[in-house]
Image 1 (cartoon, protein in one colour):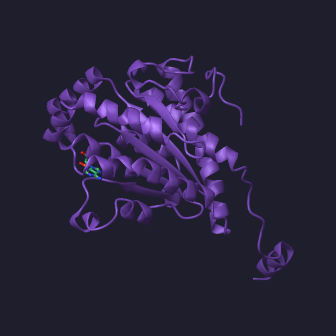
Image 2 (tube, helix red, strand yellow; image 1 turned 30 degrees about the vertical axis):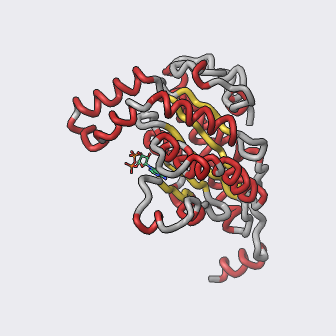
Image 3 (tube, helix red, strand yellow; image 1 turned 135 degrees about the horizontal axis):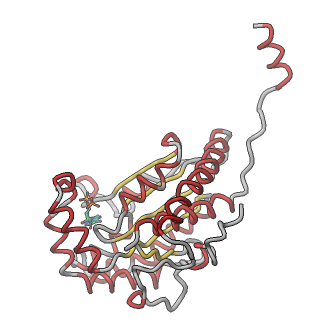
Length: 284
Ligand code: ADP
C-alpha cells in the first residue's frame, strides 16, 4: 500500500541511520519526512494502525500455517523517550494474540549467571509473531558501557557479536526493526516533572532516572557508537525523534507496515477440501 501523501519521503528511508550519521545534529523535536501537523498525525495513527492490524493478522495466519517468518521490533531509548506509549498506542492496534512482548530491566540473579544474550534468545518471536522488545541486548553496550559494569574489552567485543547474532536471526526469517528513540534533555525534564506533579504518574518515577540524566553526554556517546557499529544492511537502525509523541508513533507504525509489506504475505490456502467440508457442514 502506498504511503499517505503527508509523508514526503517514506519513514523507512528518512529515518534509517546511514554511515556518518551524527546524533548531536539530530533535532529531537523534528518530524522528518512528514509534512502534516499533530491533528493529521493523530488521524493517521488510527488509519494506519488499522492497516498494521490487517497485516499482522496475515502474518499470524501464515505462522499458523507453518511460515517461520516473524517481525521483531526493538525499542531502545532513554527514560521518558516513550517506549511504553509506543507499545500501547502502536502495538495496541494489533491483536495481542499475535504479539510477544518482552521488557528487559536490570538482569535478575539468574540472568546474571548467563551470557547476556541468553534472556534475549528466550524471548525471540516464534514464526507468525510480532515480537516487541522494550529495551534489549543493546543495554549491554549502553548502560553497561556508561557505568563500566564490565571491562571495556568485554563490552567493545559485543558490537560484532550482536551483528553476528542478528544476522543469524535474519537468515532464519526474522525481520528486525530497530528503533532508537531520542528525546531532548529539555523534553525529558518536562516529562520527569510531570511524573512528580501527577499522582497518576508517580508510579513511573524512578529516582535513578535523574542520576542517569546526569550521565547524558556519556549516554549520547554510547548511543552514537551503537548506531555507528550496529546499523547493518541486514538490521539497520531507524533514528526517531521523540519530543513529539504523535510523530514517533506514526513513524514506527510506518516502519512496521513497511517491514510487513516486504514479506509479501497472502492468506494461506485451505489445507482441507473446501467443497467436501461445505457438504459435511450442510449435512450436520
Ligand atoms: P523502565 O525504567 O524502562 O520502566 P525497569 O525499571 O524495569 O524499566 O528497568 C530498566 C532499567 O534496567 C534501566 O535503567 C536499564 O538501563 C536497566 N537495564 C536493562 N538492561 C540492563 C543490563 N543488561 N544491565 C544493567 N542494567 C540494565
